[in-house]
Image (cartoon, rainbow, N blue to C red):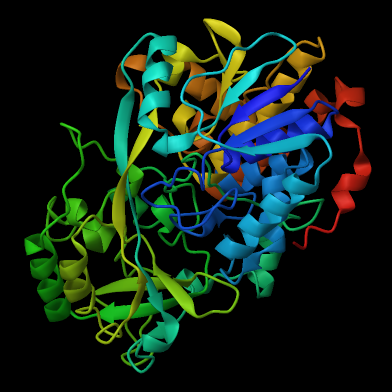
Length: 509
């Protein structure tokens, strides 16, 4: 009895933890460093290559609810993220290196987990006692992609993800930027802490990604849909959802127009080997957004709403936000500025942003392939392949979008693979929970127009009698979800109550 997991990113590492915590031996395959990818920099498990943010951390938004559910299911990804948390107001952001170190060391030290550094080019054979989980993510190798296509019986869907640049902190001109959370929301003050509702409590921490390509950008509900959101569900690729501590680069109308002209005339990198560019709407490159119209960026990643420039006392015409990227505070990422512009032009264009005229870039933005299957035609809500129930898919390649959602799919795949291996019935939490609603969406959405999705309250089963206010309605949905999750866990209490000592384990690498 052994579960084999291919891919050591968010989904794969979470699945390994869940299965091994239930007494089932796990072999986890990660191809790095034997075979590198275009965007990974290390051989660590769960390496983040896009944003370092896991988005909002309160129960009045759907991703905050999903994280709380995962904490209650003893998610390793949640615990590790909490242990590597960096300032981000009411959002959860992590030090990438510390996060990956914690995940890697925890799984390396687990007596039931064997980590194999090798590339898997074909789906391993699977049986009821030896199930297989594929969690290779958006950068699944060509050979394995070809084998996956033959198993699911159809062509892969795919799109491209683009990742944001990172700038060296001491090259930012602090005389031109100002620090402020949108609408002044922050966990550091009483307003934020009251709203967190235990999100930093329990045995919790939050997570990340990284694997045979399991990284990917985080998403939301469309690049242009972010305006006006005060920490709701749509923080695309780390676009400020009104809940973080950020450096803000304000732009006047003239500065914005000069930036826009340079951006729309910059040379983009070639998208390799594919005949159709298809980007996830919540993670569009800034130049793709810009070509939709001159004001699109001002209603997306450069929206000024909720910010006040202390030099003028007014809202700027546009603003670029910088988010701390590591614990040392010496790296800042440009929020929502994923791009595929060639590096030479990228430096020239980005240095037109006030405060970044002399910026040194630790990493330029880039574009990479994101491969996923059409979930509704392939998967059951237990994350099993319908045509081959001993095979599970998890992570972004299963048709979810976002760090938290990827880890959540791995969590349920790991639980159900362990159940299958032990001869128990598989199951999924009810649709009234965030984690159950996500599984239901992936397996029941319209396959003709399927696109990877973040968790939103819109896919959770509605309340019979909902409060009128949006915040109150969302909090009521969250309260019901946590109660229903507890009932689902209680229906098989012996399965969930195992090895409680791990919940207090020191995750310091």
